[in-house]
Image 1 (tube, rainbow, N blue to C red):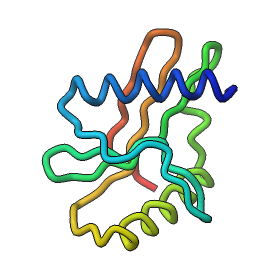
Image 2 (cartoon, one colour; image 1 turned 180 degrees about the vertical axis):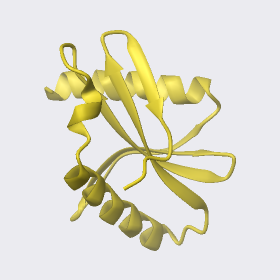
Image 3 (tube, helix red, strand yellow; image 1 turned 135 degrees about the horizontal axis):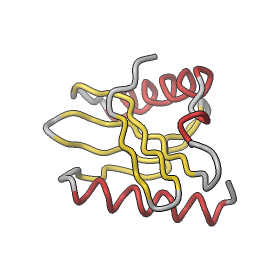
Length: 108
């Protein structure tokens, strides 16, 4: 996915989450372990959200066990760095054409 397409997908995801009542804490958190596209808060639960977009294939297939492991390491760094005590989960937003699927609490 090109940077421009990725940016547009993340903007759609952000607007979608805000419409659902999520507070966006941070976008594009980077550290040596990886990147998290969106960190959002709702009902005192932190959601570490991966955004995937693809016009031809279902973007869910781009969320691999290896990618989830990187997200896990990255979110642990974020939690430690920010002294978070909230419950948390890994979630994903998959965008294909104009369809948005929100997958909450993905199990590793």
